[in-house]
Length: 475
Image (cartoon, rainbow, N blue to C red; front, side):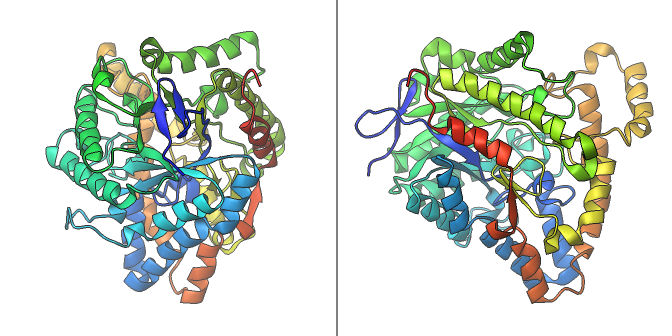
């Protein structure tokens, strides 16, 4: 078997035949995220808190078993049964080095990554390696695991140097693995100057190519993979490279300005948003990959009788986006494969030890809207309104739109700092204390809640994906 490579606007095999990669991201696994698995704040915070509560051995047991159960052979077999052929594997740099011991490789970082890559290969599934979290935080959001809204990765050269070192280690380890479709060196950068990201891409590509001349590289656009307007002619020096957009639509979230009815106007808005993101690539005849996209879904414990109607509306968004992608023969990776019930293709049953243990806590998190992703802030909006009013009254209008505006509106920025960083920090210890007094067997059972056998299937989503997995315009 040979490597996949980028040829013009296409991804092709060794015979030059087009390969369309269609699959999902394994979000929340080697880069845990709060809305995916139910903790507050950032991953580094809950890991530290759990050590504090149950000790190092039991804490390591939980997280290791969580990684083991989250994706196993049964998951790979199910994924393949849907007709999907590629999984994007997000991972946190902390699995490979410590901030207090930088550039010293932790070999155990490869343990689960190798295992899942091999499982996917066994079932004929390609993988794309995605550095989702970089030292200092390459973006302004919680999933950068920096605990701040400042993307300091762009302000400190040493953070960038450490990622260059890490990709050297990754390239050395995976250079011969042809089931890896490619490397995604940096997830969703937010460089406020727009040019440092291009310079970093030059560096990381040169580093990878020195060791690994074979694998394709997928570069995210700036500002959460939406903006290539400052990339200029950089592509002329980059070989075997595709460009990643993240095509989330506001219609797929609780903050949608209107009900989605698939009207001509709404479909036009979907197309226009997508076309703007890929405009630079189309102007230069370059390959586009949609590395993340997809709606979130209502849950009966929160949305009650409206749940089914809301989700049918979200499936309309899903189908209309796929219709656009099929016409362009676009490779895509929907977000995401598994979670606790908000967006995953499969999700942890409410009757498992984990979901039973955290039932009241999860309801509290939802009411306080301390997760950013798809938050419903209706219960606390009045609490934060005086702060919003103060800023709107005292700050000049031209100074209110701070980067990453317009992706972050003023209300989003206040929510990120006040709810998702400040309030969530006060709940980290409470999350960890749920494990107090648990035996090793109980901790194992809690982690095993995430195993495929303990998950339910989002049938509507999976049917749409299956129906579209092999659909290509003109066939």
